[in-house]
Length: 197
Ligand code: GDP
Image (cartoon, rainbow, N blue to C red; front, side, top):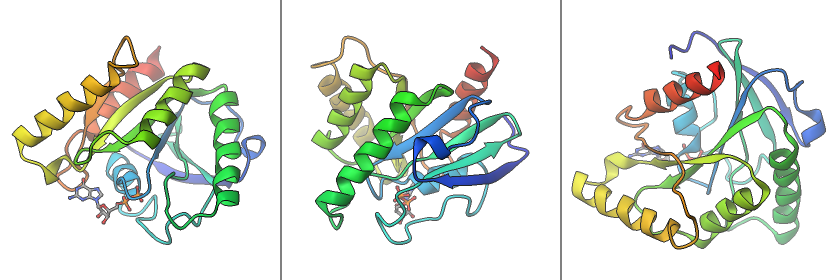
């Protein structure tokens, strides 16, 4: 898919404030610093659509971007910030759950995982929650350029093994590097497929 236009639409602090659900929607989420902003910028071919690493954890809002006038890309606030208070965490959880469980146009949630690290409880629990609520998701491994091909392979196999301890089926998996511009077209091609369906 060619990105012709990528336009910021609005920031919402609750699900009810989100734009009218009149387009297929794809949300991106992950732990702080996973490379979400970089991926969104690489996907949309935009230098700075999503701000890269400003103040971590500051903006607890749902950001909607309209792509090609046809679908929404949604930047969800990340999780796992060390500096964030318990109250902020709860607020985050309520807002995110409300969005994820009720957004009727949400076609798929892309859960971002840093390719370099061992499976993290916080990510696995997040996926578990999505599964329990029937929210479709796929995985995006980020920063693949930071590993050799062999290391990457080992990490992916290890991750899949961990997933198969609780899941009967693996989700769709994408491997990306925003730095080296790898994997973006795979994600966009998948979105294009879903948009046609
Ligand atoms: P966010 O907090 O999830 O939005 O993460 P950012 O996109 O701000 O990225 C966090 C850090 O990881 C920044 O220093 C980025 O430059 C770096 N980063 C993000 N994606 C990649 C990548 O694909 N490769 C490499 N080598 N670094 C990356």
